Length: 538
Ligand code: ADP
Image (tube, rainbow, N blue to C red; front, side):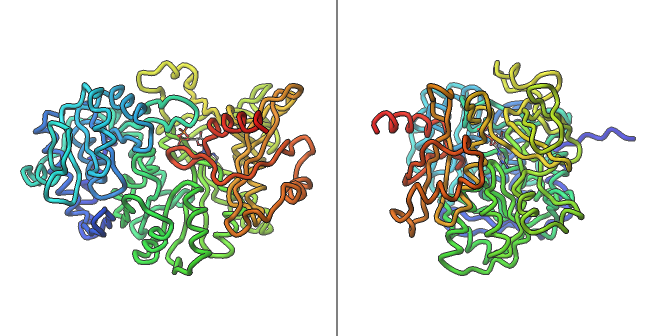
């Protein structure tokens, strides 16, 4: 067979040729804007030309600090298709982390949303590699800023050519993008995506038993474009000619519900906290959600109670998936097999609450205390993965040796696998509660708590214990209408029949809010510290 290179230029040029009339709907600070893929492709060519004029060369890193909108999509293609590397920067990281990763990636140019300028002004003195700042704004004028030299995105585009030819000298293994992990468990680590990896990962998003993304879809990635490339959806959607709805800055559950209703969104994607918020909104007010054929949810475990509420109350199918920055991210998805669809309702929801089976092209092994675990749904072990869109190292980072060994990525996630090959994430190695030499899954207890009707959110963490080394403590946020009306005893009564006695939390603490990471996951490190001082005081 022929060895033709799998590069991203073919993705954008396909949209330009075959889907010229299809739309990208973009919500920015000034409202809703509609572009055709033809317009997006022309603007992408102009941006690639502008970058070349600014001196960007093959392999240079170009950073973006931006929400989900059309300009960010243009950068998604212009940067890699000019031979450079798209470095999406997580705007919710701490200023120190932002400065660290820009410096570490050696970004040459930064594209910044106007409202995010202060993030960079605060650390400009540390950004010795950056040669130019490009501001993305709907305003004709540049905002006041101390950044220099600074350019207006639209002015640059006006001065560039829409006929610009994308770089032809790209090898499929060349770097196309990079993203740093969101530092849930330590310092951010850089992952570099190749053209080949992005093309093959996009292909996987289109498989019928995966997300089945297609031209007929109207896809709204809520997951930020600065977090694992919005799970690769903007790349795949452009390639397939899928209508894209980009929800822009500072969205609320209400804005999301309105966009789904008005744009007739068919597929949307985000972390569980987003969907818990949407569920709350749907309980307050009625919206027409009938266009939705699926909510893709990952990044943290989707509680069974939430999946059930979407599917049974609102008739919205749920797709639970697992992945990480290092895996592009799609690795595992819970599409039920034909014969599993015939099981009882409860069994089906149990399966959907698992993360699912490995997508084609990937391989896995699960290493327990005594080698590879049995596929019995009980034995736990660390998940290792390999495949064409799995990273093979961290960018200039000594953590590489720990996570990448003998051709495998060791995920740091502890899982079980059942007889059908369905994977269940038990916990992160660091979050597992080690009580008297046995393991307790914080995620399992959280999920049961969150299935209780008065509970909005629950996080379970380990606290040190003299005799047992660690014991679980549950932190619970009640739904607004139940605040002050629910006792610990009531929750224990609900939990007790569902767990062995030694799994029950030593304490249940009511909180107003659970601290979250930059991408909306429970920040267990902070929670553990907070609890420590709370328990010392009480
Ligand atoms: P960070 O490591 O900084 O949180 P990532 O977004 O790469 O950034 O997180 C990947 C991790 O998120 C996985 O290793 C896993 O622990 C968790 N995760 C992802 N999807 C799921 C899921 N569906 N269920 C449970 N945990 C998940």
